[in-house]
Length: 70
Image (tube, rainbow, N blue to C red; front, side):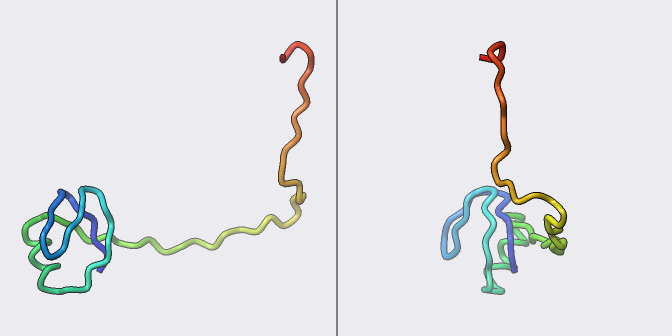
């Protein structure tokens, strides 16, 4: 299960506050959840990424400076 540390702690399993990590040891996981040291991270379903259909392949934009801009 993917978890996020609410506080920093160390021992058989260590994390710092805000760290997200995978924990597969059920005994440690239940201990940490019961002590409110961690919370489960719910993964959001990934959205489909739209392609650049119909857009130019220009990777860099162009910028023209006038003498007043310098």
